[in-house]
Length: 353
Image 1 (spheres, rainbow, N blue to C red):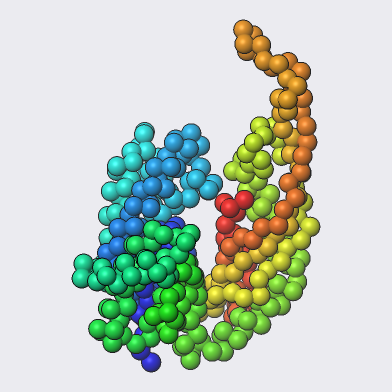
Image 2: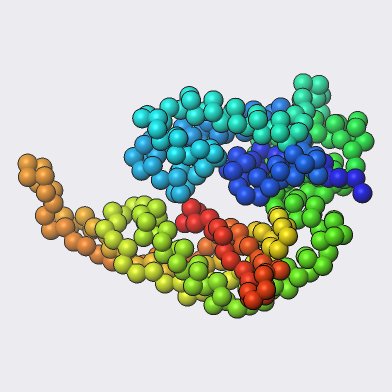
């Protein structure tokens, strides 16, 4: 069977934090080994650089105060390999960081043999016809999708001219999955693409069945993961990375409860090693966070004394369900004497709190 050739859309790079995610790192490794062919357009290349620079510009003012790469704003800095070296720069120079990212991005493209397809010969009349008739990726709500339209047309013509088999598109935006590409496999996640690649290998058939059984057993034992999730959740909230209400001045986090945890039944295998596998899935967490805040409604500020009078403190509770990406390692062949089918959470992205 011919190996998969995959087009990666800009939306996927952004979602995967510009190649920093574990699944994207694994995809690059597979491409470097020539197990998967990856292609992008020159438009996607430019959009990746532009979006990374924009996120960096938004993050730097906050990072200069907090130096917290684990919060939502600092997420973009995790795409740099040598994080500690970043903070040697007294002013976190934006120009240096942008240049450093581009250099690293170019090196990854070269190492993973990613083809950058030029859009210069793409027919403009085809694009404008779609624009005026509001055919995807254009619509009433999305009138300015010219980059996506040029990228798609470029890729479709490239696939046709090269007669590429086993072609697929990875795009988080469903509007990209237009009529011309529906005959191809389409994925919304990098992990879905890797899972498809792994599942095609006959040598993994028994291992995949074993992983499925272990995962099913573990998520049915909710207490198995619940304590671990609570510890990670509690550490994140108490670290100061989470603000339960941006409109209130939080004085303290007083209590955290997680009454319910529910793992998705579906998952994607992104890595299989000799004795263990890495899977990506999601977990829905129902959490309650009690906090104390300063109530300024009836307070009076004395400017000369620089002091508030009649300032009251009130309590409130955040009561929410949210779904978080989670990465789990499953030991499907543990050493003798160890528990068979052990599983461990190795990462959960709580930055979306």
